[in-house]
Length: 179
Image (cartoon, rainbow, N blue to C red; front, side):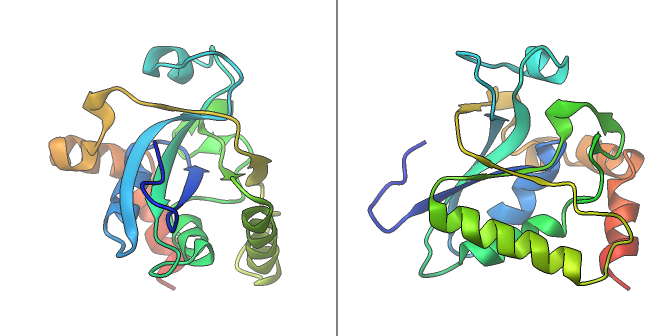
């Protein structure tokens, strides 16, 4: 994925099932492209079956291009926090394992600093009784997922909603953020 122009930046985030992260960012003004895929591993490539099976170091992720004059990296992180359980060190909801762990992959030192400040602010907010477990790691690689996974929430909306509700994500997010 290329930035497209000199003004655009990239953000890469892992938050459990990648289907559940694409929609919230697709809807944001200033985010010009969102693709789901696999980030963080050192293997030469990645695919759904190997990643989901825990056979690589990759994590299901979204990789996006955004215009920092329209949406800040801090705002992207604010949206991200509201899509996940940041206190779960073992995955997200029904999806367990390192391939579903939450991670902010930074592309620049500025993004690293913003991510660390955002994570600390969330920890300090008192919103959660447990420590924030989301990792902040340097960006290493991103492989786009197979086309069937791109925009899954649009392609298969009923299956997507059943999964999101059945996994526990829907109720957790409602209970946590709509208080």
